[in-house]
Length: 333
Ligand SMILES: NC(=O)c1ccc[n+]([C@@H]2O[C@H](COP(=O)([O-])OP(=O)(O)OC[C@H]3O[C@@H](n4cnc5c(N)ncnc54)[C@H](O)[C@@H]3O)[C@@H](O)[C@H]2O)c1
View (cartoon, rainbow, N blue to C red):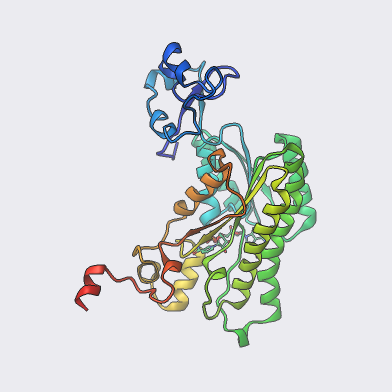
């Protein structure tokens, strides 16, 4: 498996869900949330500690089911063929989710599910243009038929544009709004009611720090990502009663094709630009965003909805001083 953080607890049959069950009956009953309602269970801070104590013989025991953070969950992911969506697909699958990877790009999408399967995970690819209501309907119907109502929807597909206002065409505006905003609207509309009927679900929408701070040349892109921001909050409230959580993620500058395009426009390398714009002094890797999505998708985030998670190395915390400078240099300047 590609994942290095293997969160593993054991359960036998339907016995749910104590990570220390593997330590033996008497000790584990102390911690079993079924026999002892006050017990330490996977929802406690101790979970991470106990989750690492399985012996290799236990892990190899075919009679014991290994529980990962997304065991038995089904996740639909858009824009899964490359960049951040690819990383999310691999990460969620590595934590036990059955991943329905979707994208316009069938070749890239197929590559992702082959990688997941070769890692021992479960995945399928469905072609999906997120701007098509009809295709969303088909993907939803297929998913429910094959895997049941999904637990997780990640609206990640997106397109990017750096263009000054006066040079931005109406077609470019429409493309940004169609893919980035309408695509997310259609995705939530296709899946939120299905999740609501089951009274469970986590939707994660990909926005951008460009929705949070003004930045020249991004009017159409930023407007579309701001739409994602407020839609996420609105739908979070609309579906809270039905226990469907909706959260938004705001990446800063992440090493993908989009970043290459941005760096080229700036006449810099992605690493130089990453160093410059992030107080942490580096470009984010797609896995940095994928880890945040994993948390929001999991039951660990069961009380989080309508929230906004910035993954930007500190960029928006210091909008007036985007250039990376160490405290020491600052003191000496
Ligand atoms: N890379 C960054 O620095 C950065 C920063 C902030 C936000 N984001 C957002 O993250 C998301 C992923 O971007 P990325 O950086 O991985 O870029 P990427 O270009 O590598 O991936 C985008 C994916 O979306 C797919 N896609 C585009 N239009 C589609 C459509 N109509 N239907 C279905 N799929 C479509 C593409 O085929 C591609 O696989 C986007 O929403 C982007 O706006 C990226």
